[in-house]
Image 1 (cartoon, rainbow, N blue to C red):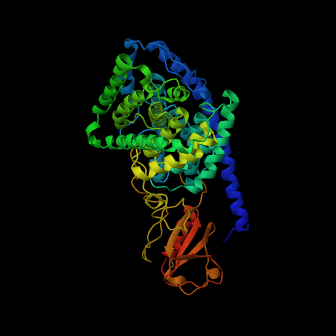
Image 2 (image 1 turned 90 degrees about the horizontal axis):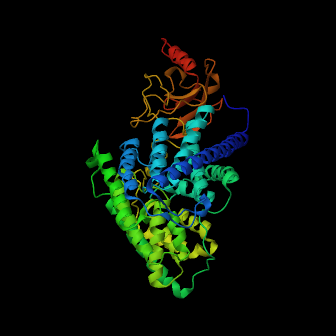
Image 3 (image 1 turned 180 degrees about the horizontal axis):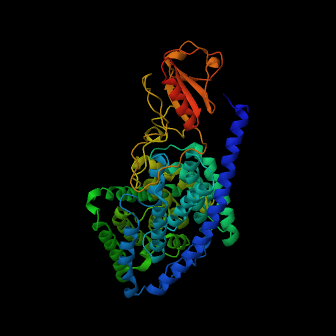
Length: 548
């Protein structure tokens, strides 16, 4: 009835399988991101030809630290149509890649169907390339989730593996575009909850996948950090009050962005009103770019790098303000989410304040970026790691303090409505006893005269436009039933079972016991069977016979 292999050996085999799958998935996602980068470069080139304007880019992604052109008004008129297409491609209630990732995880792996994920990928690609407030990280995160879906189709994954590897794939995609695999892995594990809690079980698979993905991606495009900052020194004690002002300013601006999310009820943008509202956001972006400043185009990461070198001054504060306005409207149609838009707004605000306070703009940029990102996504540790990866270890004390202060002051609100407060509220950790495998659904005790049913029968209501998870990779299923009346008082080793049926656990007094042969069964016991469906059907047929 038990595996002949020791439990320690089985644990090593299961862990080793997940390690190998994580590395393979990371390599797969790294390859997908290479194709995605090439496609994005082509789309950006087309957009530059249409608008006659190119925003500065980050050095790590092959961008130049200067802007080109003057933003032709007629070319900018395409932005409303692109924004409407963006809203039409992403169905109402699905959200941006981060929203989909978090919601699907808490729903025990019920992510949107593959066609919906591909539509989201296409929407984020055209949105970012056209100059809308869509982070460059959004399509790469979506590509990582699609990579996990592709691996599921060629590899036998159970529900736990698929759920874990989907997070790992997202971490791999995010790590490639941010050029920060460690920060990306921590961000995915931290992103799931609003409180300072982590999904520790997925940290190592996410890290392995992110490292493998970054390694493959770097072979094609190099391993230069995403942003190159001047030599950053540890801030002097006399400058700390100024950086405190920067952190408080970014925290306040982020908190106001959270308040803007509740300005419109969720039912106000249903049907045709949603793409129409998105077109309005695109028109607002086009008007600001044409009449005031074209610096609002893109996610702002290139301008952040340029400003950290001292080339923007107080103008960065105005750019951050306009970006915040576009973000406040765009959040209602899944525009502005992700990492880099928040980093851009917070960093540019820090640069603008640095010119007034007379402190290092590079340090102020990272303090503002860490604070704003912490408020919007509830990821203080990941925000700190990102700034340290880009700016060096000298930033660790000040950005860690800034992100911690921002998280303390902003509370547990966030831009992602799919986040839950903590592990207790997650569907992954509630509703199933700890002694049952996570791949099965708990069914309450039934009366002795009712047959047992599979754990995966009569599943809860599945969200719309999702795929139901495939059955467990094994051809056997878990069943649970009370002890038949004829078995009461018998020793477990004396019970005769059909071929293909075995007892894997005995539930007594709320705890599970190993199925020892000398264990005497009682009327209050419950048995957990591992069996093929047809074999268990035969067992139930025998138990229904008179005198059985």
